Picture 1: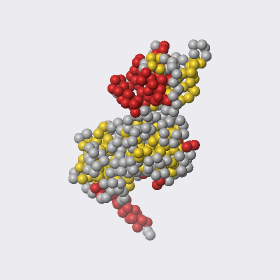
Picture 2: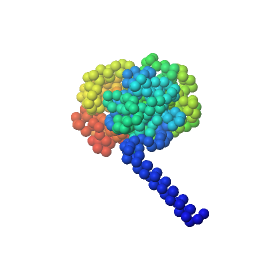
Picture 3: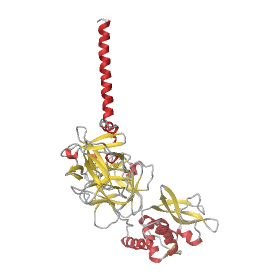
Length: 470
């Protein structure tokens, strides 16, 4: 090949490159930058797979997509509302639906985000039946756009509603969404209901470590069927029984299949006692421990033993249902409801309930040595008689705190006595924003000093020696 041919070929290539560059410049000049951002390739959404997410419009980050009306029925509207306390209906799963499309499934009901008759509703179950339930989720410079595969309409959200808008117009912030992995926020009391209508419960009322967990029929009393859930930022939950405040976990901290599930003193670093709620569709969840096992049962029948399984296929499906606190004593629960009306349910209920006990009961030493679920019995004895000793005060404050949804426990041990020795004593510990404080209504009453409410062990008026936490 001659030098002239090479030069001629190079000139043709150069002219082609210049032409392409000019064409691209013309496209940029003709179309807004927002359109270029939307035309980016579908993002890798693998990081959302199998996780619960929240979906919020960029135009108002305080709004979240969620359900309204009869949240479990087909045709329930999808709306944008402020964050609800329970987050029920405001959490979703993003599931691959083939050909680069995704299904957006309610973590609460298992039903799918659907465009129907100019509205956005939930319908169908588990997997999409047609393109009206399949969505193209596309990366935008500010977040993601969500466009329906059947109509190409984009999702748009505001306080007035969630609607489909034509996909050929410019993109506004109400059509761009932040998708964030979200843990289920379940602080408070809940029950776990199975498909057959049973619930997870204590085999018997006990505050001892090692008491077994079983399934019981729902609706026949409340004994041991309520659990206090404490959410952590990493998406795991401690599951404490309302009677004992001991946490669910496998016997001997085993990770193997077939091991009985029991209650035991909660230890924050114990992976065996921390659980992730894994969505299973149609509003059901699986309980998976941080150590790797799933919660299962010998069968979905009353009195069936709760056991561990390693295989997800054998896990027990449960619904997580908001419940009221139960002390295990119906007559005490009824009295607590009356006290709530008297003390109030708004404001600083921890402070109000502590000083109600300290100012309305008197100190009196008398023999009572209850066994079994002694905390509830000591509290009932105090409330009934209007007087008691340190353990009565501690039990009553503890029960009051728990009834208001605080993570509290009775502590027994010793404090300095007037005879320069050590005296047996009981008080309360409670966690506030992850920090432990002590509360001593008995000493507040006897010494009439304010230093016994919400103190740390370092700044408490006396030296407390902890012997056991209940």
